Amino acid sequence: MTDVPTPEAVSRPQSGNFSMLARHIAFGLFAVLIYLGPAPGQIFGSHSPWLREWVMFSGVGVGIPNGRFVVRHEDGAETMHTPLEAADIEQYPLILHYLFENRIFATEHFAHFAAPLCATAPETSSVRFEGAVGTRQGWQALKIENICASSEGEQP
Image 1 (cartoon, rainbow, N blue to C red):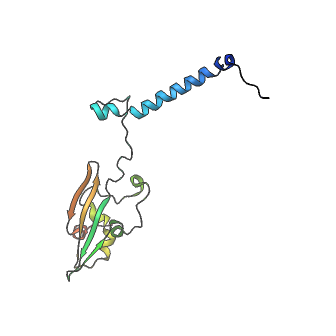
Image 2: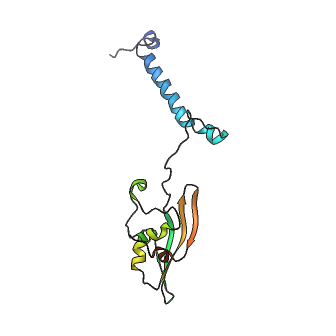
């Protein structure tokens, strides 16, 4: 036969219950603070160092082109290349901020980004970009003509 606890034993607080209850309350308050911390800045526009806003993945796509590079040959034929093909890389580095020096922050940086494509394109062809580049304010639509012509005279 199993021992069945009496109602008095069940209702009587045990010595560890208060510390466990305090931990649960502290955890709950901390979770609410983390979850609702950004609310004043997002809802009311008030910013505080005590209630930090969420800054997740800040700047991940900054300087990365999204579009196509088009090589127009002398005979009028066009070939299209992805940004990865233009830069002659298989994929972007996993940590762009530290390892990827070819990010585009100004239109002059397109020549450096597409240098491998410019090296393989015939002298009489023109290379242009149609698409957008990631900025801190969002994607900026761009159409750049004669990318390789702007890289002439640059020393690697």
